[in-house]
Length: 363
Image 1: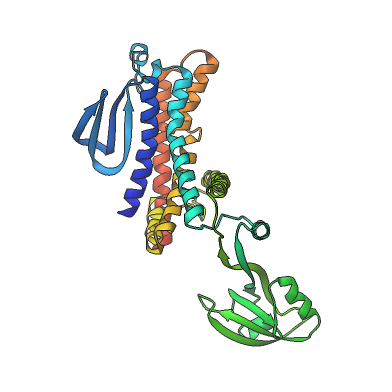
Image 2: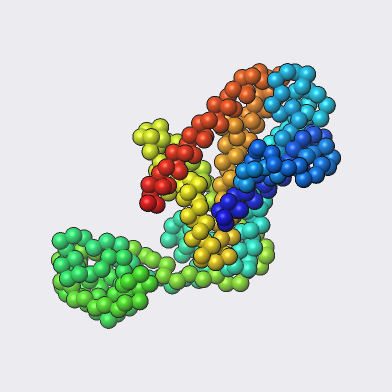
């Protein structure tokens, strides 16, 4: 239920952008539907628009006059989408995406200001620089990523995915410190925190070979916290977060299509409706602020997806408007509708394929 409500709100906000931009440009919005057809009831009519409730309780839509017109007469009729100027049509097509971007920025600013969210960092070096600037506070730890099979550490049961806190009783915070201490000894004592929450204390005595114990170490940010931030600082972080999340979304979509073209498989890390529903359920259990961060991510993802220059999406329709501007005449309407129809069927097929992989991974 939380998942359906979440996506529906994001879609309706997106459609509200189209609605407001169309009204501003003098384009008649024939219908603003809550949910998907078939139509259940007309709630009311205002300004030439029928506000409707539809039987499928998911998402929403707006129907602009003449947006699917085949004849030149219908396309250019007063109040039709095609009769609006090219700049106005570009604004209308971009308005939904703009609304989703604005929503994400507002939510991120709120989260960084009042929720003390930790910004996204793509490397430990970036995180360390942020800590040096006072953007975040963090406690570093040495993480045992891997225990090499057959190595001395493996033979005595040193646990993988644990934290190495001290070598020979000397606290360590960096992998380099571990290497330096091991270079001076042939046998060392590891003090380790293990378990899911790193609460179990274990001691191991490990024989070394050429200063190595057979473990792969990395730097871990064990504890992260954020100082109180001003609204301006939070806005700056939200814009940075928007940039990073947008780039990661584009990379994810690119990897999806490359993987589909090469192997017909959906790569790890790509989630469809079932995967998003699972993430929504988990985020709700973890609290309101976690759920809110997911909302901001999905709003950004919806914006990026829709602005892609792919048939049936806002970006695809934008391509036809730009082509009309360059060619000084509209693209053949039948051709445009066929291309958008084929694009829509392809997108539905991809959604079903991703959903199939979601189900396989979950169950």
